[in-house]
Image 1 (cartoon, helix red, strand yellow):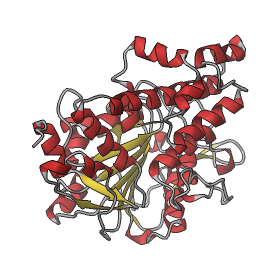
Image 2 (tube, one colour):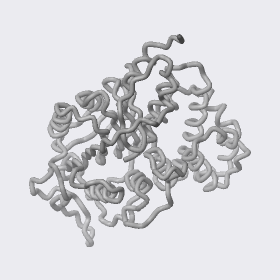
Image 3 (cartoon, helix red, strand yellow):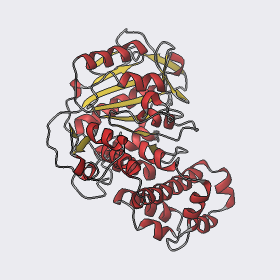
Length: 406
């Protein structure tokens, strides 16, 4: 019998096979340790458990856009047939009745109002986050958890109400309170959001092994950059940010109620998280550079030389192994700049005026999103063609998680 590494055995015994938004623990014999990652036949009916923490740390940075993001999330839940009243939403000062939401009125003056979010559970404090995790852990809740954060962040930290920050390490350790076979998906929209991609590791530490709990996430931008979307302006038609694009892609309806083009790129009848993520890369006209856990894991394995080789080959060649949502990103952004797919990324970007490449934030962001997508595809191909069974197992585990949905 073929011998696999201890890590492969460990991953196989703890992996969660995800299909169509439900999750069940799976155990495989040695003969199927690798092939099980390709299986989506596991049946179960556990509904998704929703947890949202939103708002700033104090009234001065508790912008109305953050409240409106929580409300849009509720409308998305309703659009997709979820029970809004059962979603756990914590926002700023909660139900205290204080006017803490900052906005600009029609006369251009700063004002504050009381939060108005139906079914609000309470304040978005560190204590409430820890208490909620402890309660769910005590209940041994195995429902898939979808965690949405919209607020402010620093590298490896998110700002919660009352001045207490939730660190990446603490976040990862709090998730450890849940059963090991509770899969966790996050959508995080804050500055430096990509730093939280490391929550897939024990203690959020890249030097440590993966957590035995299946985890994946989608982030507004990479770990080294601020993000957009925290505005005190009231008019939602002007909002352009990751939350707006991700949930529009997932639900098929924008935050102002209009239908948007379907993000069901593989035409299986379901919009997965990674398809909504792909939609956002094209839809979002901002400086943000959205990234996922799998994309982070892939890109951080590449050397500078390997990246240069990918960017020097034709775009068409890289597209050969692209999944449908990846092909959509590459083809649509390439069309935006009239790129020739039979030429390389490096040659194509010369078509873009130097002034735009140097100073226009939206142009820079779209070019970087295209670059990142090409690297993702190439590195995934390299991993799959290798004989590194550990890496292939990790790749499949993350991909299964990111391909799930509500």
